[in-house]
Image (cartoon, rainbow, N blue to C red; front, side, top):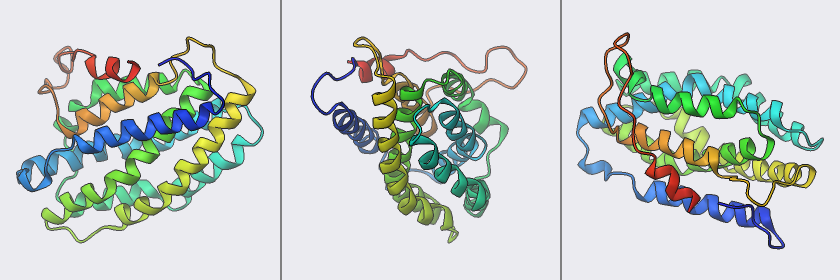
Length: 237
């Protein structure tokens, strides 16, 4: 997708991001039709990705951001993640749902998770912030689905989903304010693919929900066969 050239590019980017989030949410499998193992797998793969990576991704966005007004907003988000120990909330959530990740769960998302890590490591201010805005918006809308899966697994431990269903609304709004500041400071070129990171992260989310290939045992060469990147191409269309 080329950079918008109309009067309110950030609003257009936010609208496009919301549309992508809604597409992902609408594509989720009917939770009532999932088996116990399928529910467990979604929770476990989600936990495998989020517990050890979200703070790293947000830290990358803080490092990448250049606008003076960006840092306080991003740091406040990061402060909540660390001070309130969100990774522990998620771990307790997974354990209570009998969905603590196994090596198979971690390997199922390894390739796509690696791509997201490498993308965030490029420290692109606009792309990094837009990617995190997409993810915060997705998480906020995904929490009710995740909570339902856990409840069906017999869990009553819902602190993680309760907190993120509320706080990520504010976090998403803050990230789009940061996006406006970063675009004003370093306007992207007309041919810039601003949704590069969103496409990569969307593919990871879809792998969390419905793995496309069985992982190989660790130490046996490629972790899993490569998927055709049609999901990424569709975002750029």
